[in-house]
Length: 154
Image (cartoon, rainbow, N blue to C red; front, top):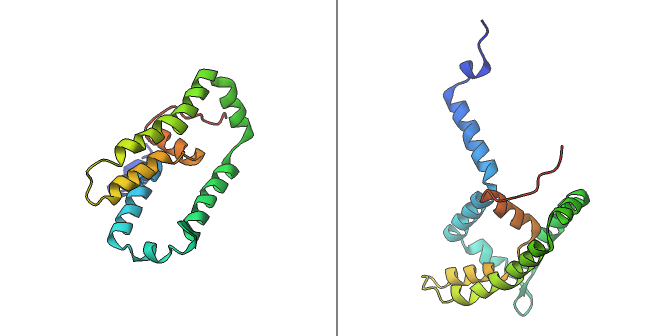
């Protein structure tokens, strides 16, 4: 009788595989959490890279935003886009536009009034509400919440 690989595999290896799978499935919330901890513990690098080009426009912020949109655009696959457009109803598409460009930004009026200490937390939440999501971030958030995300066909 042959023994399987899991019989000889140490328990810590099985546990590490489970932790790795959990981190890969929840990479976006984990990355946000790590970035938040680093930013709160050591804010100096973030303060030093705020090099203004024009009033309230900073080089690093601008480059990061452009990079996110570039990567999101490069990862789009036309066959998935065609599938999504043929499966979606007009009502779903209209709701998506209204929710992303209307409802969520209106929440910004409420979130700025939240009594957070420091006030920067309310400001950050408000900025999050008024910024339209990029495709990659939106899909990652929906996937993390176990929502309906199109999968490529085999």
